[in-house]
Length: 341
Image (cartoon, rainbow, N blue to C red; front, side):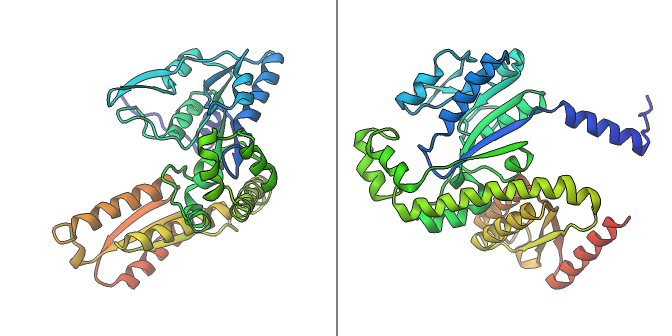
């Protein structure tokens, strides 16, 4: 059977139809735990329910906060998936149940969560993409410290490297990103009153993370991120439509040096996100780093960096050669020629 050939106009129509069939994503973002992201999600769900919208809770984490738990009452929920792992019964988001139920809107909290080993998707943000692809709208939430490309900045501020991270593309595909903001003194007051953590964790939190200077810097990151998302939306919706050839392209050139490669990838991802641009990662394999010579740990780090870059939206380019500068120039020339074909 011959494959149907589409004209450019037909392909464009098919792409537009596919985009229209996707669910819409709204993300609440905050500077830290306890600012009220889940609370705001639940408030919105109650308003939607009163308006006759079929909204369901897919997964909400109340963290035993009384105010948040009270808002769960009265909202229909899709039962969680029960999983036994290392002798313990745990609960996960049930993606299949959501797809079968097909609500208009589903609340899926803890966007950066890592799923239990053996789950279909490794990360909850991947679950969200699957739900969106099925045409179901999602409201979700994430803290600023979980955004991949600013991981280094967060580490410098807090002294902690956050392990559960969300690629920037999740915020880029979001139709709306809303910042939930609180002054540092208000957040600390909530902590002291036991509205964020239980009494056994309050002093430790005050000593480590919940310090005014750290909160202020994280607050700045969150505000900048949301402002940047709005700017990119305007840039794409208005400026890009008028002048699509203005946008820059970025090429990140990495080696097998793991930490340096990570920094380069994150920095380039951040720039590409800011300019709403495409970007590539180039690795030139020299003879001394052939598959049978490169140490296993370096090989593993390379693979992880390629995976990370792909999740951040990059195209991976691998070349072999001894003249790295020539390979870089050749790649740039190839990309320029492709752009104008």
